[in-house]
Image (tube, rainbow, N blue to C red):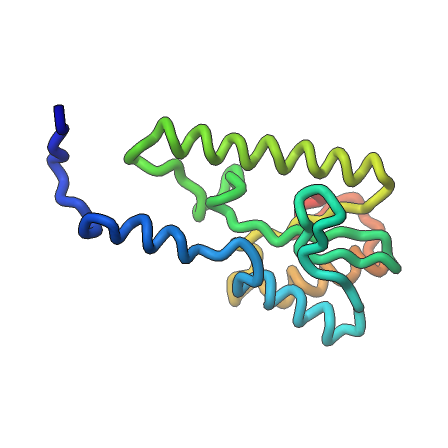
Length: 157
């Protein structure tokens, strides 16, 4: 039995799959933004290093720090306006996003157990009005100039 939806389909048949296949997993705009800022500040790093759990977006061996640049939707940024659970196919999306979230927690624990400092920059922290403050704070956390426990913009994952 085929269920007919009361709301019209947003995409033509086959278009949704094509659209979703073009969502990139690495070298996203926000990742490039963070990496270019860190490079301009003189930090050298490896990107998307497969030797570490989670294939971190930025690995700074000299500072023994790993940075993940997370999209608010894909990593379930709690309390963020950019994250909301999809209204259609709820079972699939809930399972997928919870799996991503749980995997992030496990990978962070593994990295910290190996002695790495793990930092997360969220997509919502890189809006134009907060970008400079967030990136400056990230830089200071990496080089150790910001030893305060309170982190107003960057979540210490």
